[in-house]
Amino acid sequence: MKIAGIIAEYNPFHQGHAFHLRKARRLTRADYMVVLMSGNYVQRGAPAMFDKYTRAKAALLGGADLVLELPPASATASAEFFASGAVRLLADTGAITDLCFGSECGVLAPLDTLARIFAEEPEPYRKLLREALRLGKSYPQARAWALQKYNGQLPIELLQGPNNLLAIEYLKALRRLSVPIRSHTVQREGAPYHEQQLERQETASATGIRQAILKSRGVFTDRIREQLPFREIYEEYAGCPPMTEDAFSLLLLERLRRVPDESFRKYSGVTDDLSNRIRNCLDDFQSFSQFTDLLKTRNLTRTAVSRALLHILLGITSCEPPDCLRVLGFRKEAAPLLKLLSARASLPLITSPADERIPQNWRCADRLYESVRSLLHQKPYVNEHRRKMLVL
Image 1 (cartoon, rainbow, N blue to C red):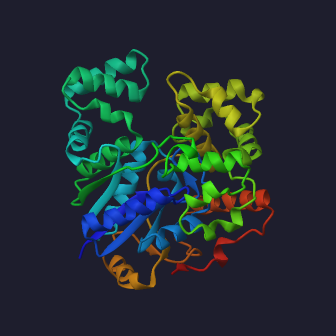
Image 2: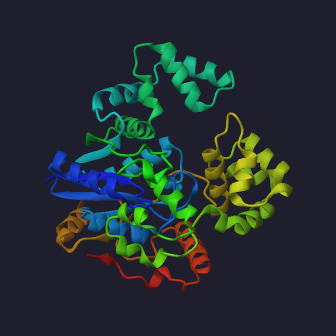
C-alpha cells in the first residue's frame, strides 16, 4: 500500500494547493494522501489567518484522506526545524511511503545535491560557513557564500526560491533521520511564493490572498473568492477583521514585561543579542508587528524576530515535536488508514480534541488562539473539549 505525505500550511487553501494535491496523487500513485498541516500558528511567526479546522476541512475537500496537525513548536520554527520536525512525525506514523513537496525548479536531483552537502557538512564547507558567519553575514547569506566557495559548480541559484529551500530541508531531514520515504517534487505554478499582487497571476500565492484580505479589511472580493476552492467554508470569516499578529499585541506586551530579564534566552530562537534588544526597546512597544520591525537587524530577519516573539508568547523553549500524532480530520473512506496508523505508529494516535494526552502547552496555545479569534470576530468561543472530530 502506498501512502503519500504532504507537509503544508494551507493558510488559506487555494487553487495552487488543490493542483499540488491532485498532481501528488498521480505522481506517487498513492492509495491514501496524508497531509501534515500547521495548526493555529504558522512558520512566519504569526497566527494563521484561518483556524486549523477550517483549513483541514478545505484539505479534505481538496483530496486529502487524513489531516494530522504539525504542533506549534515545529510549525513556527525555522525552515530546518520545521522540516525536520515534520519529517520525523511522518516517519513516526510508520506508514508513510512517499513524500511529495512543491519547488520552483520541479526537479529532484539538484535539490538533493544541495541537501546532501547540508546533511553531511563536509569539513571544508563547515570551515567556510564559520568564516562567513564571523564576517557578519546572516545564516542564509553565509550558507550561499560557503557553497559558492566550496564548489562553484553547485546550483546555488536554487536557494533563491522559498519552496526550493523547504524542499532541500525536507531532503536533508530524510537523509539525517535515515527515513525510508521516497521523495517527489511538483513544480510550483502561478504566482511566486511571496507575490503580494493578486491581479498579476491566474493562480495567486497564499501571501497574495492574505494581503488582499488585509487590504479589503476582511471583505472577500470576487477575485479573492475565485482563488479559494470550497469558498463556502470561509463564510464565517467574511467581513470580519483579519486574524494577524497584532491581535495578540497586548498579550505579547504583558508577557514580555512579566518575564524576568535572564529568561528570554530560554525561548526558542532568542539569541543573547535579541534578548538584550527586547529589553532595551520594550518601552517603545506599540504593537506586535511594529515591535518586530523595531527589533530586526541586518543579520536578524523580520521573520526570525517574529518567530522568537511568538515563542516567548506561547512559552516555546524547544523545537522538539510532542509524543503524539494529532488527527484534525479524515474522510470516512479512510477509516482503514486510521486503523493502520493505530497499529503501526510509534506514537499515540489522538483522534479526540479532548484527549488528555495532548501536551498542556499545545492546549494553551489553542485556547489563546480561539480566545483572541472569538473576541476579534465577536463570535462565541469554541471550547476544544466540545468539538467533534472532523469527518467528511
